[in-house]
Length: 196
Image (cartoon, rainbow, N blue to C red):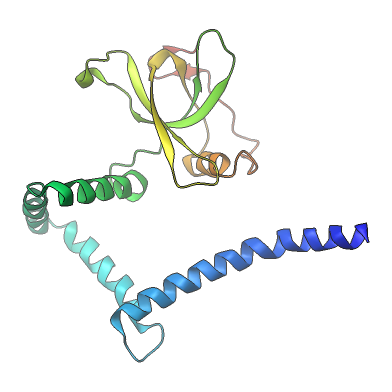
C-alpha cells in the first residue's frame, strides 16, 4: 500500500505542474478570446496579440511617444487613476520594459551581528534623493506568492550575485526548491565596496 501511495505522489508531482500550466493558459486563452466575441475560436486571442504588438511598435516611434507623454500627463491629474496607472506601468516596466528593475540579484546581510542572508533584487542603488546616502533599496519577493517587501539597507550589506535574474526569481518564488545552475557562484564584490 505504501508503494502505491509513493507512485501516486510521484505521478502527482509529474502531472500537476503540467495540468495547472495548461489550465491557466487555457483560461487566459478563452478569456481573451471571449472579450471580442468573434465566432472563430482563437481569432480574438490572435487579434489581441497582434494589436498589442502593433501598439508596441507604434510606441517605439518618436511621434507616438509624444502622444504617450500627453496621456501620462492627463492621467497624472486624476488622483485614484494616477495611482493605479503609474503602479501598473512601473510594475510592468520592472519586468519587461526598457527600464527593467529586477535584473540585479543580490545577497543581503541582515545585520552585522548575524550571518543570516536574504536573496533579493536591487531596485535603487542610491537613495540620496531620500536623504539616505550610502543606502540601497532591495525588493524581496515572497515564496509561492505574488507579493514581496521592499527594504532599505546600507549598500555595504548588499552583495551582487553572479546568476541570471530569472533563475534567482524562480529560486525565491519556489521557496528555494528550484535550483540555480551550478556554474554560477556568488561574486565577492559589491557595487559600493566590499561585502562585510
